[in-house]
Image (tube, rainbow, N blue to C red; front, side, top):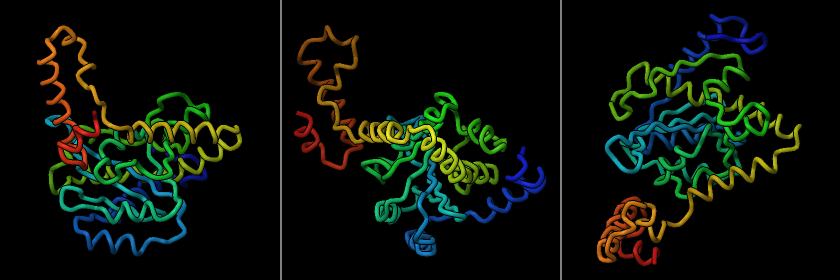
Length: 262
């Protein structure tokens, strides 16, 4: 791990700091554990760094397997497979604090059951990096390296995040993915304000949230060009099947979902 002068005194100190942070991250798999963790957070924190791990190899929609959140110096790894973390949604929506994510589109999809309208006050660091002149589509690993002088490992990306307990490697990777979001947020926020692009940036984040909150496509079969020549009865059956697929993720029942799509 590389560290620049002023951010860490030496490579050894930077590594020790991150090992300490990893070991102090709290694993939460009960509602009471989440309530206790939220209760001890300082009330005046202006941002929360958020990341997710999910699987979708065998499902149409992503299955949320882990939710990481960093608030100030506190980091929690929340197990959404063990309980419903609605208390976190209430906490996030209770104050105008920024929800800092990197390349948030897939995270927003994975968080849809918990945050149906997306993370409130979204600050997407990938979008911010583009407006700050650092390039379009910059990855988290490169952004942390360029702005903070820290090299992050990426060797746990494709692991099985539904496995319990997590391996030490998975635990460390999950923590690193939120550990630096606060620092990135502060630096990028300053750059955007200096360049006068904060309003444009906010519009792009709002557009991303609007896409996540968009109503279901009433005619999803039209996205399959190869079936355009099918008989009307077959197209109607395909439409019903696709709407049924989408309603499996919707809070409404199938009948209400169909009615809303008409």
